[in-house]
Length: 276
Image (tube, rainbow, N blue to C red):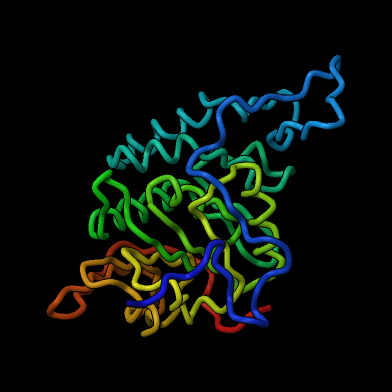
């Protein structure tokens, strides 16, 4: 029997990130509150964890702001109740720079540094909904083990963790890997494992995957990804078409082989090999 990887997952020696891998839960822990300044914590008790501060007056920590975003996603055609619930749970404003925080719940992509972007909420929701329509599902309606190529700032990984049993997310840029780890730490998602490494190689130690999703587009889907996809699973990735533009490509792995379909045009950062 193939041995399952240990948790948290780690890349082979030489590729592992410094510090601990992120270990966090499907939803932010209930009951977290800001500390009462009038009561000093007892020295023999750990301090209560608190969410990162939000600029005063913006109200972005309110679930009503995210609910409004979810309503717009539903009006735009998104219908998967688990995806919509996950989009309403994950605080997108905690994954963007403070200078852009007022745009966090607009349907727009935003820069996250190192030439990369956080995808539009509608694109994140659309891709995850498509993934769930063909991925191997658990009895509770969640996807099984999912591999994400391109962690970025960690937002999509957090959404995936809400609709999957387990998520491995790999990032090739050390600066973004570290940023995602910091962004995700307050959410405490224990089924999400961050990896630093070459995403084009996938992560064979966690295979086979019920689903694979990529946040960067190349000329073709790497063979390593389809090899690591379970029979009955689904892969979705942006891929260059004949006219040099990107389009979403969905690949279903059946007992008879791979079945591929091309969907709408998209624009993602280019898929690159190696680490930096």
